[in-house]
Length: 166
Image (tube, rainbow, N blue to C red; front, side):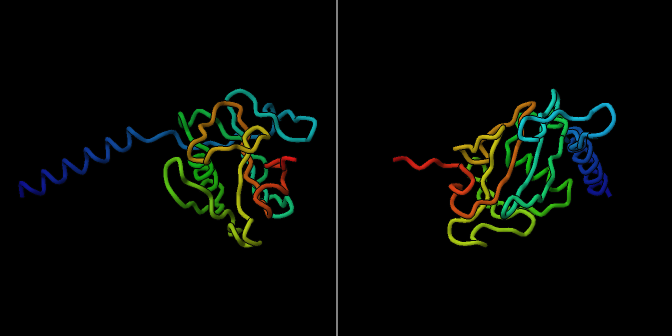
């Protein structure tokens, strides 16, 4: 009987501690009414203060996730990988990772996987229009960032991610 009471107290403490440690739930911004977004010269959303934008483009630029604005204060020091996982989960979009920590990378989004279209196909990401030279587990987002995942058929060359040197 005493063991059951101790176990019950421990379980209650674990539940209370885990509830207190939870980050705020991800919150998608409403893009209607007073919060109508601004757009750049290419027609892409310019995230305003307190927001991060997220989008996913598949083969031939097909839209998998339309530009989605998310309040940036739900987690501090969040990597592109963790942010992408949270957004995709919230939007019910399957996303598959391999590796861990700073070496994590995306194998597939919305059932489109690396190597589905040849040995040089897969997912790459850009922040604020620039493809990054570090893994998505290393890049820490900040307020007003714009994250895009793009499916490449040629190790990013087809998307302008890598410039060929002469």
